[in-house]
Figure (cartoon, rainbow, N blue to C red):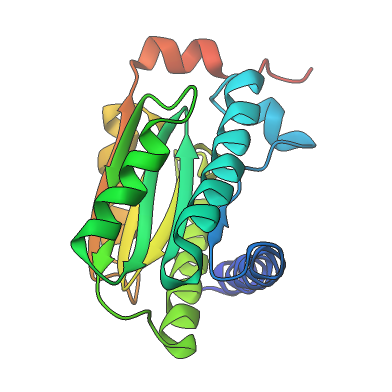
Length: 210
């Protein structure tokens, strides 16, 4: 792996670990996949600024609802992209799996829910750290890939399964899938893309600086 990729990987993994620690301190066993809505990310994100803020609100409201209703017996990660919610993590039984989905689906502005919760024991710290490392590798690989805008993708990894979200063209979806599939540690790729046309992508591109 080239030195540039290694540097970006170290940065991505470090950031992921810091964010994971901060979120765990805030919400206990619930891990909320936060959307970055400040600074330059708003300017280059393919969602509207309103959608970005709404995604952050959905994640926070969902985490609070799950924690209040189910307490510490579940470990749920909530990731919202353009009001579409991905649920990952572990629950002890099928009833809790369905209950979590119902709680989130009833939240205002949630358009759909993808329930990827597993019915099994929570993973060990080593397993969670491995997922964090894989996510960092994936982000670094996307950053290094030609003709891809890494900030157009939201990446979530659970038990070696990497989920990709974002508003991308079919060309970008195929290229990103190939990049992620060959990333060390990725056992499976699940695509949850919103496909847009090349014309729409051109409209979303920020104007070139003189």
